[in-house]
Amino acid sequence: MADLVTPRTRPYRALLRAQTRSQASYRTSFVIDLVSNVGVVALDVLAVLVLFRVTGTLGGFDLRETTVMVGLSAFAFATADLTVGNIERIRQYVRTGLLDAVLVRPLGALPQLLLMDVPLRKVSRSLFGLAVLVAALAYAGIEWTPGRVALVVVAPLAGVVFFGSIFVAAATVAFWWIESGEVGSAFTYGGREFTAYPITVYSGWFRTIFAYGLGFAFVSYYPALALLGRADPLGLPDWVGWVSPAAAVVAATVAAIAWRIGIRHYRSTGS
Image 1 (spheres, rainbow, N blue to C red):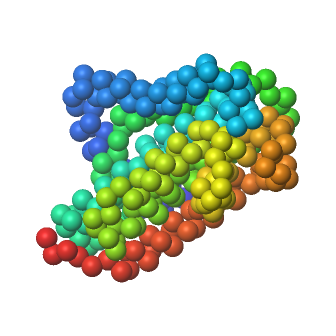
Image 2: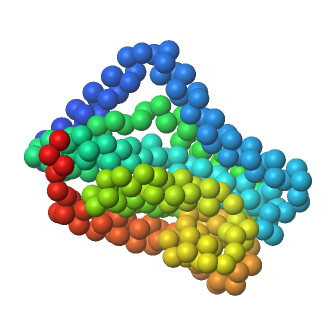
């Protein structure tokens, strides 16, 4: 089995090793980047703590409950940004013609693009997000059951897949609209902000579209309800808190279809 797999993965592993060596060659700069990247997640946590200094509840949830949502959101987004986030550079690859060179190689286009510029400095952000999640779960006083133990393992990974799918789907806009600007960021970074708070703080069409239409409610809000053993103030049944893996599969399927359609309709800029 190893002999069958190794030749297929060797080019990708070579790309990853090259990225690791190049980024770690300047050790002082690399360490500074690692430390500075923690600040992004730390600011998200600090923002929630500041809010709770002026209010006892947020959307009907106290600090103990909200930090579970913050932890799930922070780890999922940071890890997806580490592994898939650089796909948002595809506008540059299309504009400069680099995507043409990628497509003529006998390798998958998406894995190549992801491994061309792996942001290893963001490892610290992912680890800090995991630390926030572990601390939040300990602070929440959850009554653990076998089902909740399984959910606390699966839900963060499902969140990673979900955010990764959003990154890929948003990037495909560049195949039709190169100057798409920050349109994709509205869904990736906007989704991170949305999932860091209980969805009950939002209302109307905005909550309907982001929470249920795009599925962001299944990244942190509903898994947190299931872990905490709380009923949904918005009235959905308890089993909804366990469907985050299914939501991730749907998101990944949609992103894969969008990517395939985008690649097939890609027209070189000739640059």
